[in-house]
Image 1 (cartoon, rainbow, N blue to C red):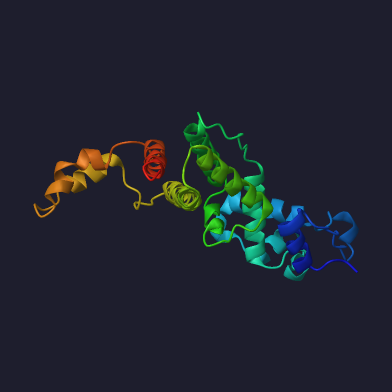
Image 2: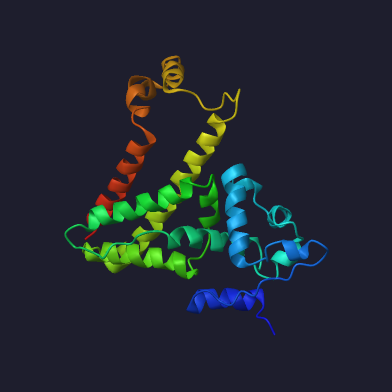
Length: 245
């Protein structure tokens, strides 16, 4: 008897990828279609997110793209949350984790955070799948294990390092989601929601005098690129971790 999706999920969390028996296609065109596997589902899901954004991803949408019904997917993936875990796990599996170096740990942890950010930004909004998800997927755990090892190599106390991994991951997730949303808004013709820096400065200058600091420091409030702000915040968080030693 083939393992259930729940059994395959448990195997992924304990021993790595579990068995994935391809689903047999039925009907007159069944022999001409590629078999349904977990990898095929993941690849199709990534394609949908890349083209339409994460909000368009549903089990029914994936099934339609695979020219099958949702029930065929549930023979391999437990539910949408399980698919989310698989997607984030696939992205995490592609990260290059350095061997911890006490002399370079700070640059190393920044590098891992940057890699993770860049992975998320390949697929608009996909970092939403990482929110409120327990890190039980082995590929995801590999990244948190690597980040923890880097912080410990830097002399950070274990509890502080553990919470630091959580905080850094949360910021990368939130940053990636915000940038993805802004890019999608900018890509919509006639969308006035995203304003330029010049327009924002004009609006700040027109504020009443009850906003004296905002008016005075409008240039500072709007300065820097998204990359500048990412580097600043990651650096600030790491400095804070160092200050607790």
